[in-house]
Length: 126
Image 1: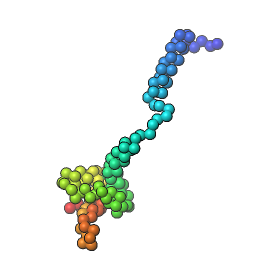
Image 2 (image 1 turned 120 degrees about the vertical axis):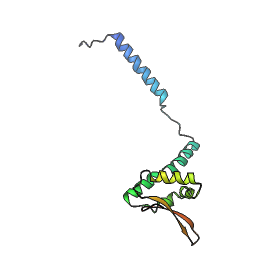
Image 3 (image 1 turned 90 degrees about the vertical axis):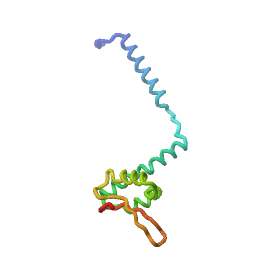
Image 4 (image 1 turned 180 degrees about the vertical axis):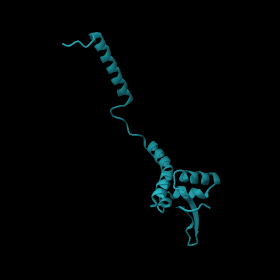
Protein backbone atom coordinates (compact mmCIF):
# COMPACT_ATOMS: atom_id res chain seq x y z
CA UNK A 1 0.00 0.00 0.00
CA UNK A 2 1.53 3.37 -1.01
CA UNK A 3 2.42 5.85 1.70
CA UNK A 4 0.03 8.84 1.72
CA UNK A 5 1.43 10.64 4.73
CA UNK A 6 -1.82 10.21 6.69
CA UNK A 7 -2.27 7.97 9.65
CA UNK A 8 -5.52 6.35 10.74
CA UNK A 9 -6.18 9.09 13.28
CA UNK A 10 -6.06 11.79 10.51
CA UNK A 11 -8.37 9.77 8.32
CA UNK A 12 -10.84 9.27 11.19
CA UNK A 13 -10.77 13.01 11.98
CA UNK A 14 -11.42 13.91 8.33
CA UNK A 15 -14.32 11.44 8.14
CA UNK A 16 -15.84 12.96 11.28
CA UNK A 17 -15.54 16.45 9.83
CA UNK A 18 -17.21 15.32 6.61
CA UNK A 19 -20.02 13.67 8.60
CA UNK A 20 -20.50 16.84 10.68
CA UNK A 21 -20.68 18.95 7.51
CA UNK A 22 -23.20 16.53 5.98
CA UNK A 23 -25.37 16.65 9.12
CA UNK A 24 -25.24 20.45 9.10
CA UNK A 25 -26.35 20.53 5.45
CA UNK A 26 -29.18 18.06 6.16
CA UNK A 27 -30.49 20.39 8.87
CA UNK A 28 -30.01 23.47 6.72
CA UNK A 29 -31.73 22.08 3.62
CA UNK A 30 -34.42 19.58 4.52
CA UNK A 31 -35.01 16.74 2.06
CA UNK A 32 -38.76 17.35 2.05
CA UNK A 33 -39.14 21.12 2.15
CA UNK A 34 -42.63 22.41 2.86
CA UNK A 35 -44.23 24.64 0.25
CA UNK A 36 -44.53 28.28 1.27
CA UNK A 37 -47.84 29.30 2.79
CA UNK A 38 -50.33 30.78 0.32
CA UNK A 39 -50.17 34.15 2.07
CA UNK A 40 -46.42 34.35 1.41
CA UNK A 41 -46.91 33.46 -2.25
CA UNK A 42 -49.61 36.12 -2.54
CA UNK A 43 -47.44 38.73 -0.84
CA UNK A 44 -44.55 38.03 -3.19
CA UNK A 45 -46.84 38.20 -6.22
CA UNK A 46 -48.34 41.49 -5.05
CA UNK A 47 -44.85 42.94 -4.67
CA UNK A 48 -43.47 41.56 -7.94
CA UNK A 49 -46.36 42.82 -10.08
CA UNK A 50 -45.72 46.56 -9.57
CA UNK A 51 -41.95 46.04 -9.48
CA UNK A 52 -42.03 44.43 -12.93
CA UNK A 53 -43.45 47.65 -14.44
CA UNK A 54 -39.95 49.16 -14.68
CA UNK A 55 -38.40 46.31 -16.69
CA UNK A 56 -41.46 46.22 -18.97
CA UNK A 57 -41.01 49.92 -19.69
CA UNK A 58 -37.27 49.58 -20.19
CA UNK A 59 -37.55 46.70 -22.63
CA UNK A 60 -40.40 48.11 -24.69
CA UNK A 61 -38.69 51.49 -25.03
CA UNK A 62 -35.45 49.85 -26.18
CA UNK A 63 -36.95 47.43 -28.70
CA UNK A 64 -39.65 49.83 -29.90
CA UNK A 65 -42.37 47.20 -29.67
CA UNK A 66 -45.09 46.44 -27.13
CA UNK A 67 -45.38 49.87 -25.50
CA UNK A 68 -49.16 49.89 -26.08
CA UNK A 69 -49.49 46.74 -23.97
CA UNK A 70 -47.76 48.18 -20.91
CA UNK A 71 -50.69 50.38 -19.74
CA UNK A 72 -53.11 47.51 -20.34
CA UNK A 73 -51.09 44.97 -18.36
CA UNK A 74 -50.23 47.46 -15.61
CA UNK A 75 -53.54 49.33 -15.49
CA UNK A 76 -53.82 49.36 -11.67
CA UNK A 77 -50.31 50.76 -11.38
CA UNK A 78 -50.73 53.33 -14.13
CA UNK A 79 -53.95 54.60 -12.55
CA UNK A 80 -51.81 55.53 -9.55
CA UNK A 81 -50.06 58.06 -11.81
CA UNK A 82 -53.16 60.22 -11.32
CA UNK A 83 -52.61 60.12 -7.56
CA UNK A 84 -50.49 62.31 -5.30
CA UNK A 85 -47.36 63.91 -6.78
CA UNK A 86 -44.91 61.69 -4.82
CA UNK A 87 -46.58 58.57 -6.27
CA UNK A 88 -46.54 60.06 -9.78
CA UNK A 89 -42.86 61.00 -9.43
CA UNK A 90 -41.87 57.57 -8.11
CA UNK A 91 -43.61 55.67 -10.92
CA UNK A 92 -42.35 58.07 -13.58
CA UNK A 93 -38.74 57.90 -12.36
CA UNK A 94 -38.74 54.13 -11.91
CA UNK A 95 -40.20 53.60 -15.37
CA UNK A 96 -37.67 55.98 -16.92
CA UNK A 97 -34.66 54.57 -15.01
CA UNK A 98 -33.55 52.08 -17.68
CA UNK A 99 -35.67 53.30 -20.57
CA UNK A 100 -34.44 54.74 -23.82
CA UNK A 101 -34.05 58.54 -23.73
CA UNK A 102 -37.28 60.46 -24.19
CA UNK A 103 -39.70 57.81 -22.94
CA UNK A 104 -42.24 58.90 -20.32
CA UNK A 105 -45.77 58.25 -19.11
CA UNK A 106 -48.17 60.68 -20.76
CA UNK A 107 -51.79 61.25 -19.97
CA UNK A 108 -54.47 61.50 -22.63
CA UNK A 109 -58.06 62.44 -21.96
CA UNK A 110 -60.69 60.63 -24.03
CA UNK A 111 -64.10 62.29 -24.45
CA UNK A 112 -65.74 58.99 -25.37
CA UNK A 113 -66.26 58.01 -21.73
CA UNK A 114 -62.92 56.33 -21.12
CA UNK A 115 -61.65 59.41 -19.30
CA UNK A 116 -57.97 59.81 -18.44
CA UNK A 117 -55.67 57.24 -20.00
CA UNK A 118 -51.93 56.85 -19.44
CA UNK A 119 -49.64 55.91 -22.35
CA UNK A 120 -45.99 54.81 -22.29
CA UNK A 121 -44.48 56.61 -25.28
CA UNK A 122 -41.29 58.03 -26.66
CA UNK A 123 -40.80 61.65 -27.57
CA UNK A 124 -40.58 64.81 -25.50
CA UNK A 125 -41.84 64.78 -21.92
CA UNK A 126 -44.29 67.47 -20.92
